[in-house]
Image 1 (cartoon, rainbow, N blue to C red):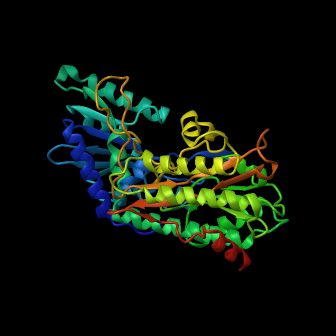
Image 2 (image 1 turned 180 degrees about the vertical axis):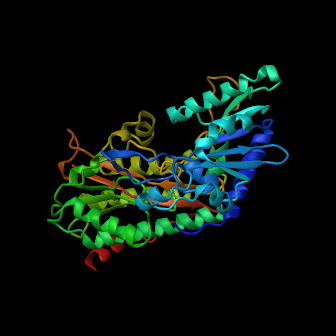
Image 3 (image 1 turned 90 degrees about the vertical axis):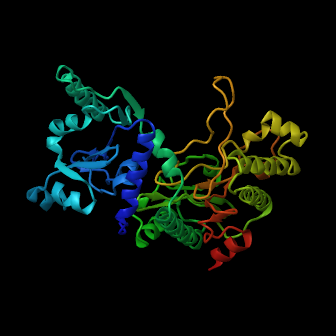
Length: 447
């Protein structure tokens, strides 16, 4: 993992404290991720919990951070103790003393001392900021610590009277990326773009989907990515019409398209890129027509991606373009207004045109703004795009065999997806290095 500036994480904790103080102050408690057993004594690769890492950059499992707001905010880490024998088997541990110094905590304790220390940190605090309902064992610990504080009420000690979901405070912070995050996401998108180019140069009739996937994964690791950001989709022919296809085990046949949805994770930040390519290196007939339609829909969505634009606008622009194209190609009948109002286009385009992107592939953040009134029946307006937000723009079209649909269109699935940063006056396509035009893809596949 690349070195990160500790100042960034100190500033994040300070900003969280400011948000907590605006609600009257209190204590925030966030757990790290646990190591998870895959089978027998084998573990899944460890990946830190996103909110925990966002505030601490501490990379180890089985830790808890406590952040106390107020006039003089403090942060306290509880983590695994040094253990020379276990470190021989499992690798280096910071231990509380070194962790406190390296990650700039005001105090650090062994995790096995938390039951004695944490109730003390909760005493006489107005509120608790925590994410309940995520880890059952952690929830039970929180209730235990609160009970310890309440049991001291006869001594003039009070427990937090309010509880807030800390995710509601962290989500808007994480939604606007800072310079270090943007730099990491640019590098992640660049690695993914190189992997897609490698896939284009590899794919040919007779290979299997998993062989193309292997080239993608190799490029991720060769370039320093720690892992895929999600299970790669390498879907040939009819498989491309399955949105979350995962088997990746079918042979590539001449004359088919291959949809590849694959993105790497770099230093806990995701990329998410999709390209659709012809297995034999050349788009033909309906493939070309549909590809040009999806590409045009993405161009219209990208042109509408800018600060101040509401979230739904790029989707609406893409949907309108796709619907008109479906009519022009004879896939649908009627007027454009009817197709849009009835939603009949959804049998060929059934998902939204994008999602937030960041530490999580489907990242945190609301898509709707605060309600304009207290009436529960009032529809919440869409949120507006702001400089520093990162989202995907990914229109597609998926045509399964169906009566009334020309057979030449059957089993064609196309999606084009890029990672997009909202800038001061428009947007930046972070994954632009992945070939996307018909001519660029065909040229790459001849290389």
